[in-house]
Image 1 (cartoon, rainbow, N blue to C red):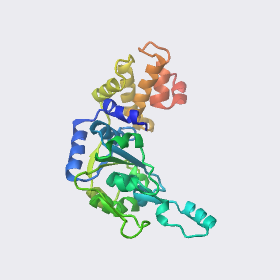
Image 2 (image 1 turned 120 degrees about the vertical axis):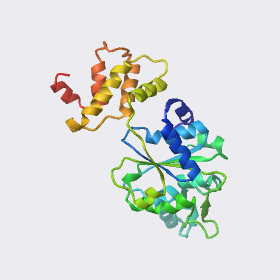
Image 3 (image 1 turned 60 degrees about the horizontal axis):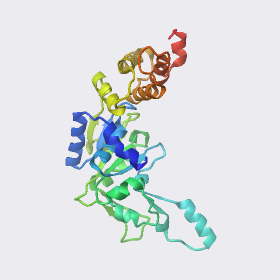
Image 4 (image 1 turned 60 degrees about the vertical axis):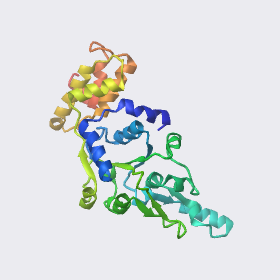
Amino acid sequence: MPADRLSHVKDEYLPSEKLDLAVEVARAARRPLLLYGDPGSGKSSLARYVASRDSLRYYDHVVTSRTTARDLLWTFDSVRRLGEAQVSGADIEPARYVHPGALWWAFDRDSAASSANPHEPYAEWNSGRAKAGAVVLIDEVDKADPDVPNSLLVPLGDRRFDVSDLPVGNREIAEPDSCASLVVITSNEERDLPAAFVRRCVVYRVPPHDRQALRQIAAKRFPGSRFPLDHLTDALLSARNSAGDDRRRKPSTAEFLDAVRACVTLGITDTGHPGLGDVVSLAIRKDPGRENEDGG
């Protein structure tokens, strides 16, 4: 994400008072903030919002089924090391192939920047905030093997870890007490997280946005623009309410905003526009074939 885009998140995101409180509790307790909620509910955007609002450094890691806990701390390029060792015929220093991960950058930016691979994520944004604290997003942790959250208990709890691929004496990465990072972890609840991991987090469930919140979010994201707000809001709430009966996935706030953006871009300003129904079908209901069969 470019620095100018990150700087604008604070003007576009609208957290509830309870979500703001959850952030402050996590900071005060020095615990990760674990966010549950439906996909598209704005969980991931919270981390970028806090970094933007408070002018903090920002790092993220999107979890997949292949993610290991060490990936968030550092990675080791064994393929490159093997290739260069075969060419040179010498045993090359392992530290040359160590790449700092998101938590390393957050906890100890100076040591990450002085490593053999000092390629900082979001460098343009972070370079002007070198002495500031950091926000780290660990996105969709439920996609990982259960061993991953368990293996992060000590690094997240103690805010320190050892990089075993570095020489003895230079292995410890530790966050100073004066500069605590906010770690935001999201889960779509595809699988249960280990109880020990959940106990060590501040937990908040992001509820679906109601009518008032949807209107406020749209107005903040598209200030001064004309679009059929009431119609789009009604369409989302209707599709959400009927999703269970139709055995379809509930549409999210993100899809509602896609529909708003489409209307703004296409010049659909009122309910009389012939393209409005198609926008709702394509962006919110996501079932245009069924709509046509039903005569919609």
